Image (cartoon, rainbow, N blue to C red; front, side, top):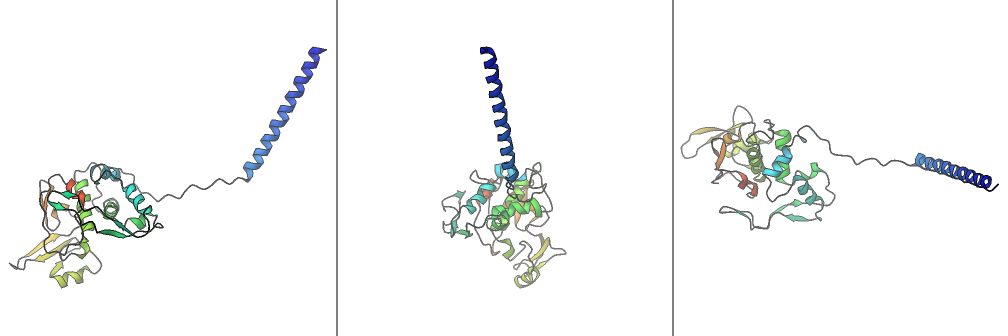
Length: 254
């Protein structure tokens, strides 16, 4: 009888466990039925150029200070409302001092959280958007002049080339500007003509940020495909010398 009693007790315990487990499963199923899975965050749209590796290549080989484009964006997002100072005024490239410590990158507020809003505030982001999506050359990481062309595009943005007297980036009212400054558009928007006031000689140049090779842009002097010097005197340049200019391997004179 003792053995039979133990068997009965074991059966009763087993049944109790099964019933409890079944009720627990039914309860969990009911809870799961009412649970709404949160939607994943909406990501910015990407293109094949965004994932081509160009961005990462420029971060490794061009950006000054061991930073990334994402960290630039994060810096703006985390900035408090007001002016964000660019640089400390102490960095130098050769004999050229970078800034006076008082320059600002505009008013950045905490609610500016999209790349589209931020890219207009930092020349490095504007130049990245240009090299990825707007430049007709559409260079890849295996192109020898990718870094150089990005840096030249960065200079055009940082120095506000749209406001230059001669051969800056094309803007809507460019034809009118060229008439006022004595410079005129060439046969297409990528070229410009400049009259030498001393000699009266009219010369044709390629505009900055045009589809032409950056070595053919106005005032750019190259040797062997490498930028060696930039001559843009008396051209209404506005802005500061960006530290990335020092990443041009053979650059010697400005």
